[in-house]
Length: 292
Image (cartoon, rainbow, N blue to C red; front, side, top):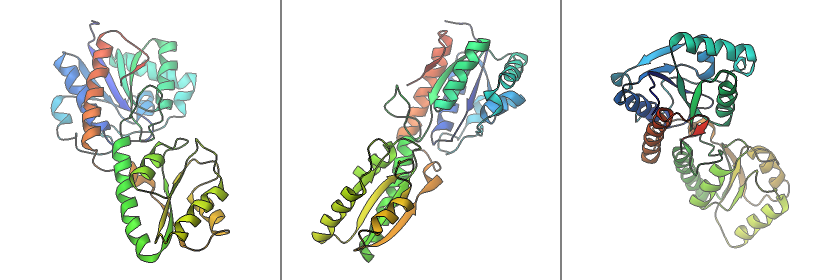
């Protein structure tokens, strides 16, 4: 075991439900092992600016149920430069921080890898993104809450779609990955799903909708991943409507509600387990690894 005295924890990139549960677990696990914990505000941007706060057990009380991140989050262009990373290193060294836990996505982890290679500051990553697009883990922190939020909205949309014989194109988040869209399409009983991982065939999509209309379906829902190569929900809806206009067509973009809200039970437990695992990994002297 490495005799760590002081570590930091930060959240970076897009926020995800469950990040606070993870912060709480990092702090309490570290304190249990006689390690001081510092919170870095606003991710790498705060690291460069020296925006640090000592985190004690009482400071993370009653946050496990909260969405967002108490440490705030940001994307840092300055950290992409050698000068920015040098400044971040100087701030950590001045504060006596020996290693840190980074909760975020692929951009967060790439930055941590380069930083360790240049300055030797060890980092353990925690996969925190609603997109679920990180290699090496089945579920990222926040994904479960996001799909539950989205499916709740889709269920409500189905109610009104049925009442008016409407076709809804529902756009969900996920960047260039279709995990949210696919999960919600299956769970919501959607007629079709459009995701970046497969080529979008508008004619085949219309054929599916026509069959539903022929069989007297009173509504239809197509779940669209925001990163699909054919465009977003508005673009795809227009292409379909130009050739198939039996249903009254509407578009619903769910947007950032998928990133907010109280984390699900699963994300609270996952965040807690990953936070403890990250601290244990640092104590074992490991680096450039992802908990999970």
